[in-house]
Image 1 (tube, each protein chain N blue to C red):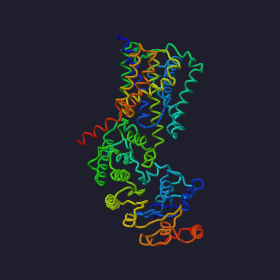
Image 2 (cartoon, chains in turn red, brown):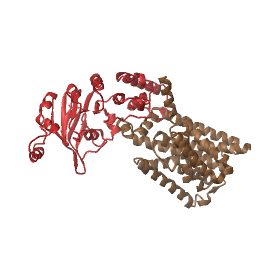
Image 3 (cartoon, rainbow over the protein chains, first blue to last red):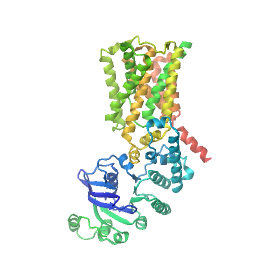
Length: 272
Length: 290
């Protein structure tokens, strides 16, 4: 059974059709890339999966559980984590505290237990701390645990955000443009990091514009254009898919016909 | 002179409880409240009325005051905490005005004249009428408040609160039940303000709505800002400073508010994070770097 099922997901903002009947599935253990030109609806798709936006129609299932009426924090409990396109760290906290916040769900102690912590609670905190330090080690920030998060360089912030999301021990991690704003070297480091992350029995859904990262990392690719799913399949197929090339580069034939073509044949044509 | 210093100390202690509780809402959870004096007043009236009408002993009146103020905090928090910043400011401001009007207009609260003859606390036969003993009682409550709040903000709950303050949406995505936390912290802060109200009522022995209006809300807010948002030590310093300062400025009474305002402006330009706010983390960071 697939880990994430996005079923006829539709999201309209007034007259703008950000998502139109988008259907795809993410299999456990795979890395699925979600690509498309600017304004294709990729981040909107994340926000709906996440529960930050209610869909106009359609459903999202995580491991068979209907997420529709669940608030974001409940979805997190079910194993959903994400990073943001514009990095959203807790600026007033230290690097370590940011990661520890990701362990929030791993500390199931009541309010009174936190006020008068017994040995069990202290053990749980110490355990969370060790895990957080391990994660900082993984992303190469171990020496900066005490730094205020806002003092980190851009690339480091990206990695901290990933460490924080990993601290949630999610089953499915949504990464929204993890390579945005990174230089080629940092992007290479990131790919290496994501490859290591993959070994943690984790499923990734990645929005990305950096094609070297997308083609090099993902098992499958889903392509959105103007809210519609226009193609999905293996990287080698997507690379040569005429509709994808058209969406990215435009078509040189008559305007009207391309409009026609859009509406007429937009029911997704998965190639697999 | 000694009696005067005792009086100032008792008042400063009561203000510390108020400031710490408001700091929980503003400094730690990042929410706004312009009606904190309302919970102070509710605590004072409940404690006074239960003592006067039902003859309840002080500890019971105190607990009832906390429960009632806390319940009002919960009642205000549940429907309103999905609001943000300026909207929340207006709602809490409105709440303060409503509570004030209720106190002025009800018969049971004595209307604008308030309540008189509130008995001094007697616990296990020991009267707390002498100011020295009352100061001990206040300090005990201050200590308890500081202990509870310190433990809370240094637990993982505190981390969750600061996460809400820094980025509510992200906190939610990371599994922090943000509505529950906001309501919880509003309730706790209201209950603590209620305790402060109870201590105030039984000390002054005479209360009227004037003490619990917008002016007091703003004063406590100034104490939080002066001391530093998100700093417990700051709240203690802020509350003591602004409790004592008017006495020092007594001679310049007509200019008191003017001097206040000027001081706050200078502070906000010179040290916007407040006297003790936000310093800890950056100091550690500097030390590490060297």
